[in-house]
Image 1 (cartoon, helix red, strand yellow):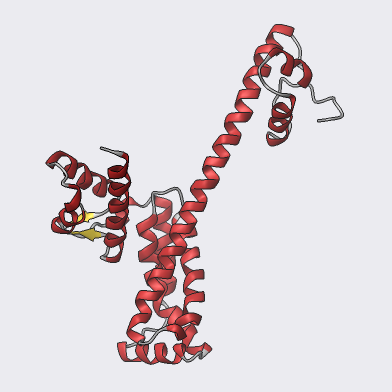
Image 2: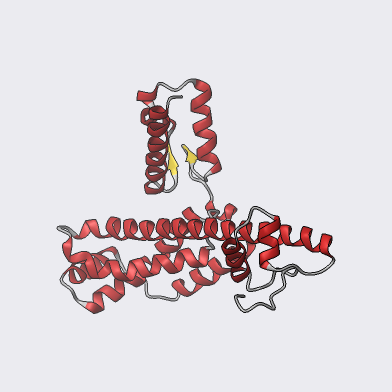
Length: 251
């Protein structure tokens, strides 16, 4: 597959995942084939797409039970969260529409009532993003913040019927951003850990040869590591690399 086809393939796959989220985390076989029609995928390549979607909790022609993907801890948290939500007042569709119209006009009380209405939806949307390195509680927290902000922005809509879609979109964007930030932080943490481990391994080797702890200067002279890299690793580890002599002013 050429680079341009790979880029287009990745773009189409992301479009399909977003479509699935908008449809309750499911797509039809026809939607899959239509999405990739211009790429003229082979049956084997198309099956790889189906396998990828199933792996990422997307149902093909049927709804996926997202609770099956939650850890026991997340299930306990979700149960407690939904129990609290269940204690809130239940409003009719007519009342919700009236709240929406008032919220669009900037009425704070109506905006607060709409938050109560959509709290359960936050949990349902959050389940779509589990298994990506972020705990369900954090996803729901981020969704609740987006919901709280969103109800104050409904004045930009033309019709009250657009409110639920706008709020869901804001919640999804907030959760996607949280997943992306978390993964970026994880990559950064892994790079730091790799640097610290590299320095620690080199220090251990040299300390075993010298039968004592080594200085930064000695470690730099005997390896291809710079003093700055070693000092950075020492600081990032909180001076926990055992085989380095920290009795130096620059440490």
